[in-house]
Length: 202
Image: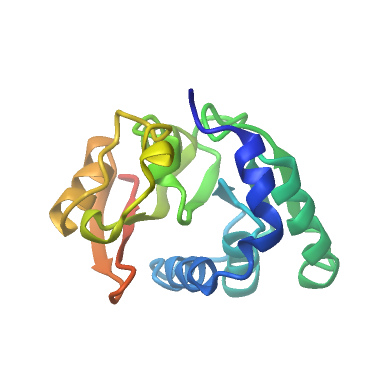
């Protein structure tokens, strides 16, 4: 049985209580290579919108599309957008992370904070598809040594994507999708995660 939107609906009301999600989202956005203000940023599995809001503030994009399959997560994000996005530049979509209902080569940046291990190996190639030449992807994934899901939750995780043990393993995820110029850093213990930035060849 795959992870369901209902499971994340249940978690939505306390999601913002965990500062880890906000820290990861801001670090991912801050680590992008300098570039002109993007036309389109896509935030995959946005949750309550941390990465979308961080991108809006730091990158000043013309448009952000923020996607999550959980209606309750998106509802929480929209409530925050009343003050965090007064111009309405973020488009909120209740939709799956795979496939993305977006055209090929149309996005400047794709973000995925704290969610790739919940989506699976098909996600990075999908980001590669929607990114334009020269576009950037940024994602995070837990370190295996610090990732301890319950047996019941572990049984629901995608079987096609192992949580990496080291930075080389995190880098391989990006390169397997055809992304290049990969950079990886590790966040501090006790909840270490890999932050990965990569680009589409021009």
